[in-house]
Image 1 (cartoon, rainbow, N blue to C red):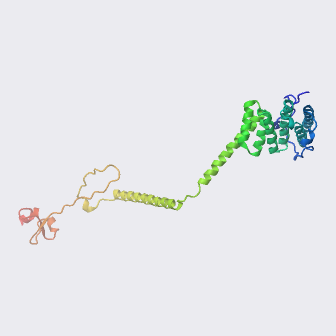
Image 2: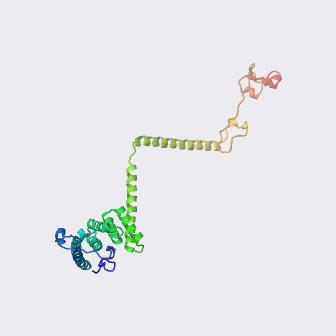
Image 3: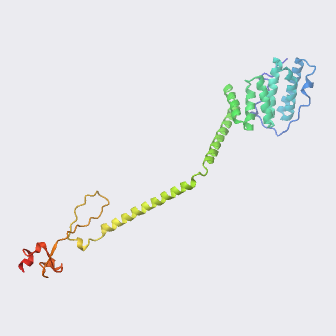
Length: 296
């Protein structure tokens, strides 16, 4: 018997390289599994399964995806009782992977993932089954599982462009989902604080204090400017201010020190011009032994 499951006989391309069909929905297989294989030998079941598979391949090529699924399901029914027989197992593996491809065209993501999983139970290293399950999982939003399947495909077949393209799309969606989760968490923890009123009061007081400090500094600077440009007073003109020892910059005005001269009482006479301004008093330095009073 000719082996129709070899790579040269598997006529179904990967879903990424074919156009999707507008057909939707899928009828159940017309014959129950317990009926089709009753009374048939293993070889007869394999032969019937191969015939059904070929019909499914023809329907798949013609874009009749629902009919293709029915044919593949019928082929699988012939072989399920004999999945441990090598000849039957090989045909069943091809039937399940082809069924997954047809269901992907119909956008039956869960059914496609189940068919691919059934194929992987027969051969865990099946690249086609891994790829088709990865695509189905990606469409269902199971991104982590899809990434695992597609990564395994890329490792097994580095030249598989469809697998690399699907994997890149899945990784991009994973990154976007992670970023969205971070944004959600940041909004969650950016809500109002339990201490918001107290925090606002502290900030208000600090702002008011800073404003008062700025006003005080500006006022002192203005007063200093006025003092620096003001003309000297008449009573301070005869005194000389000592040199300032303060550093260059803002300086404190130094008032001249006035020394009060002691006076003594007189007979109503002035001892000098300065004494006459005192209303009849006499400086000690202008006593009877000196000044004008000594001559008087």
